[in-house]
Amino acid sequence: QVQLVESGGGLVQAGGSLRLSCTASGRAFSEYVMGWFRQAPGKEREFVAATRWIGGSTNQADSVKGRFTISRDYVKNTLYLEMNSLKPEDTAVYYCAARRSMVVATISAEYEYWGQGTQVTVSS
Image 1 (tube, rainbow, N blue to C red):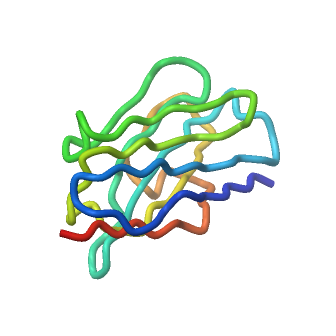
Image 2 (tube, rainbow, N blue to C red):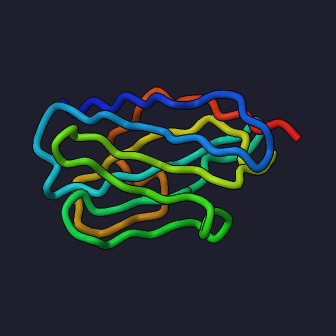
């Protein structure tokens, strides 16, 4: 059973930074893709960034390129999302997700496992 636990959300002013963490447990993730999605009130869940757990293949949404960075710590089994130059439109619940595949997918339905989410609020 895969478990994903996010942390690091909070309230920040526009232009500020936050780092989200997702600690994964339950199995080895060498054949997994791990990603971040977000969902704002009244909107559909949208792709933010994803990466193969092993290997350098990553993908990011155009809206966060140059501002967000996805990374992982193999020893800690933790996925990170470094968020800089935050904007009010980045306000959402951010979810960590995992799928057993080597293909970096951008559609939420293709991910099998989800964390509980962490709230990020950016004030103007």
